[in-house]
Amino acid sequence: MASNVSELTTYKAYLQGEWKKSSSDETIAIQSPYLRKAIGYVQAVTQDEVDEAIKAAHKAQKSWAELSLSERGAYLDKWADELVNNSEDIATAIMQEVGKGFKDAKKEVVRTADLIRYTVQEALHMHGESLRGEGFPGGDQKKIGIVERAPLGVVLAISPFNYPVNLAASKVAPALMAGNGVIFKPATQGSISGIKMIQALDKTGLPKGVLSLTTGRGSVIGDYLVEHKGIDMISFTGGSGTGRHLSKQTAMIPLVLELGGKDPALVAEDADMDVAVKSIMNGAFSYSGQRCTAIKRVLVNEKVADELVDRLKSEIEKLTVGSPEEDSTIVPLIDDKSADFVQSLIDDALNKKATLVTGNKRQDNLIYPTLLDHVTEDMDVAWIEPFGPVLPIIRVKSDEEAIELANRSEFGLQASVFSQDIDRALDVARQVEAGTVQINGRTERGPDHFPFLGVKASGMGVQGIHHSILSMSRERVTVLNLK
Ligand code: NAP
Ligand code: G3P
Image 1: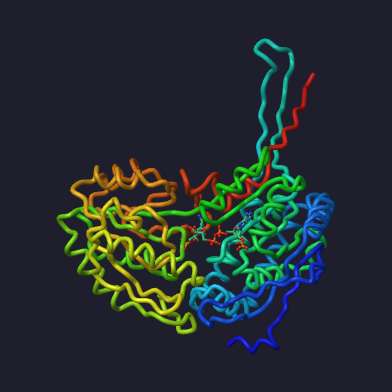
Image 2: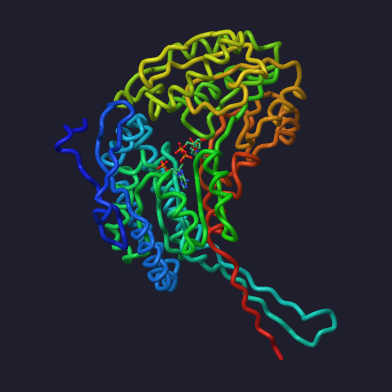
């Protein structure tokens, strides 16, 4: 349990390999969503400190990139071990900082260690290629092309609040393995978890300056980081609005954006209802729906809609609601503003005559799981990402209608299709505009080595271990011209 204010830790930023207080003398209080009080303070770093960190990263990156893949991999394997050794402490930080159940928080840390180890192995097996060829047809040159991967320079990694360790390491690890320097900007609520993650990396003896952790509000320091001439690539995960803003500020540097979603579950009349109910429940409500890949609307064939709604109602009313310290499924949302937003979507739907099946109950930033039936296209909750435990049911007459509604969304992260006819499911899946379509399963990013991408307002570029290493490096081509 968090100690009282006087004992609260003021965490330092990790700048050029040293833990330092910012010269701004300004700190940010990190509020716990369920303790509803500050649990620590982090530095608000200055633009000068950002400049110094980026300069140091460029300097250190040169020798870092000279190390062999296995030498770099040794640091990361040690990092993974350190994370596991400190998983209880880091999981407690995640739980207190973003309100994630302790078990899920611990799983996130272990999952991250696995991701880091997999990244090392993946990089070790990316051998490049050699090509043979002439010059232009009839040319007298005999050419051998050697294609290797080269680092981009300094990568800016910006992560969201809901996976403060996993979605940070999913950027930092491939960036480092590719031989880059890294500037890591965690979500403000997620900074303490990010600091503990980097403390584990620092313990490996990572060469000083290769990575800096610059804490600070995105609204204050974000633009300066993103527009900085010393940044060679940006890997961003967060809301679509922030992503759009960011993409307008950057020019001529590679950008990977993993953004918001409004993942639909398309339920055909021949769906295995046990599978559909289990997947929708887990997909829509785990961590109070605060997952980008959460199922955020159900497009169900009207022939089976009543059965589905009844079964979902009964399961929803069994969900545990309360504190992450008891590993409740439904926990307080990240802050009051987010809870207000979710409530506004529920109110709008009810004002427009949606049917309240269960829920619409609130205590501060704790929103009870809410199921809305007969949701129509004029209701905001049909289209807007709530990032909370509210699930709209939209009844459709056919697969075609479901596909049209799914594709009319500005988002295209993932979708789930439920049918016992695999040909039918594949046919529907291929028509849905999304990065990933799950058949007879919940929408989810894992496993972390699968490609992970959003289309339309859900993102740009591809994450996932292999693709992340590719996006944080470039081809280096050397051609031997033989006599
Ligand atoms: P967010 O508010 O967009 O913040 C994401 C990150 O961007 C945070 O580190 C934030 O810092 C930073 N930021 C804010 N303004 C910035 C600016 N002007 N320049 C640079 N960085 C800036 O998102 P969130 O609330 O943390 O996460 C929830 C959203 O992220 C949801 O929409 C969710 O769908 C999406 N998400 C997507 C994925 C995915 O993989 N597709 C995964 C997780 C979450 P501060 O915290 O200091 O504001
Ligand atoms: O919102 C975070 C996103 O990456 C979800 O991850 O594994 O819960 O689908 P996952």
